[in-house]
Length: 131
Length: 95
Image (cartoon, rainbow over all chains, first blue to last red; front, side, top):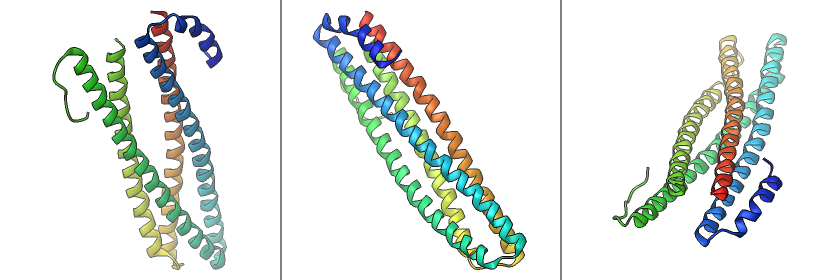
């Protein structure tokens, strides 16, 4: 179901909802927006990684060619190019790792908050600690 | 029901993101390893050194292809979650 169809379907029901249900609907919409954002990010990552993969295949082909011709100039140029690509890849992977750790921290906070809310609703003690 | 679902979704997100972080850590270790080996081989043109460099390039090409495959899996996973969230949001509104 596309976004407009979902909205057209949901609008009449939304208007007749009590406040808690509206709050839940708001959270659901925020989740949907987050999911769509993640899919867009995944697509960008796919395009970038596909390009990197094609470049690496080309480097391998150029290396084989230079090695067969014993072209020291071309082999030296590839030496530098691959070293630079590796430095960039290490930096990029460190950034991705930092993002992944931040997401885990965020998820733990969400889960703790959800458990506290759940516990309050049940009238029990709150729980500490994530996952 | 919504609370139960929210808890389930939060647990799923935490599990997925922990798995992603572990994968990134392993990938970083592998690339740093290759980078160190490449640095030590730089400027060396003898046949054994060239053979080792070629093996590293093959490993890098294989890593790059694995990343593309992983991106595709993540897109499928996120689409499935989006579909689930939409379905559950529509069910909530019908209730």
